[in-house]
Each structure stands twice: as C-alpha cells, then as structure tokens.
Image (cartoon, rainbow, N blue to C red; front, side, top):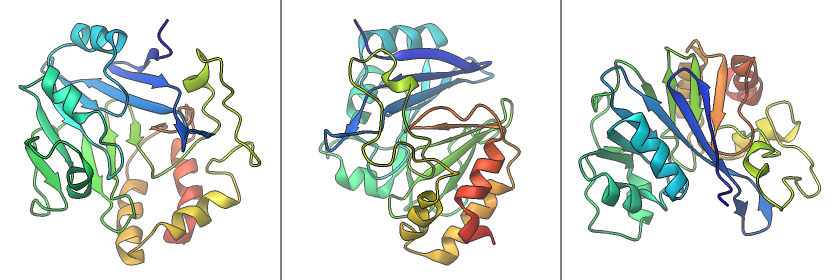
Length: 240
C-alpha cells in the first residue's frame, strides 16, 4: 500500500505527503504540491517520488505545464517527472542543476542564472521569490487565489504527522519533539543559514508582504491558519 497521503488542501491545490527521514534517522517528511491553473494546466513543485498513486492524481488534474525544483537539495526526482511529462517546463535554481546527477537534463528556467525579473509564464497566478542569500537557494511561492505560501526549506513545521500517517515509523523528532516557527531554535537556525543577511532581509520582507493564510512546507504539517504569523515569527531576526 502506498504511504503517500494525497489531499486537496484548498480549491485546486493538492498535496502529496509521505515519509522521509533525513540521514535515514530524523523524520522530516516529504511533500510535493500541485496547483491546477486557470487554463487547466498543472504547476507542480516536485519533491517526492512519482509513484503510481501520485501519477494517477496528477493525470486526473490535467496536463503538467511546470515542474519546479524548489531549492538546491530538492532535485532528486526531477528527471523522473520530466521523463514522464516531457512537454512541461522544467525550472529550478542553478545549484539544484549543478547537484543533479543527470547532466543531460534540459532546464527551461534557472533561478540564479536568468536575469532578475525573468518570468516563466505562471506569474499571473503564482508569485515567486528566489532567496539568493539562503544557503539552500530556496524559492518561495505564493498562490493568491488560495492565499497559500509554498516552500521547501525556508520554514519547517515538525513533527511531520500527516506525512507519517500511513507509515509504521514514528514522526516524533529525537530530542526536540517539535521544530516549528514558535520553537526557540527555529529563528536562530534560519539566521545561521543566511549567507547574505541583506539579501535575506530583502526577500523575507517580500514574502511578509504577501497576503497568505496557509503555509505548505515540504517538511512537516501544513500550517492551516495564521501562516503569516508563523512566517513573521520564524524570520523575526531578519524583519526586526
């Protein structure tokens, strides 16, 4: 039986949540997110395996138009998705491309290489902010229609209860128990990952200016309400 939990978080916004343990030990959870766009196509942040259940739901939603790699380390399955959906535009940060094993993979857009302000075609419905000053070179995405922020490593909401809900393994974090925006450690952790503090201040402020209520992280449970409050708390050292 599949361990992937598929659900519609908001109208036309679907999540694909499953177990993932960092270093094989720490339960982080993994999640892909799909948005059905107004033209019927699908924008996909691809961060989990393309198993049959996932593929069936994606095919039901509509043709995949965009395959997104969210940061330098969420790139493992991009080849699988592009092979299955060859007509989709593949877009990721430069560092993800450099780390990806398949050097023959052709990307249609590259954050960190393309000129600032480059648009890839989805910007009327989904806003993007590339965090050039973040260690993992993450991109934050905002879907105004659902008031949802989507991100990979910019904010955690652990333990990953939903992502482990079909697993026999425990989602409990060793030692810490939880790691989220209200944790004492989280803002300090994010400060340590800022390799360019001025750029981080700029981009954290951009995201803080978006009108979102929910946050869909790659790691941990979806923040169903007060998402803006969670962001402001997690990034307080950059925003104060």
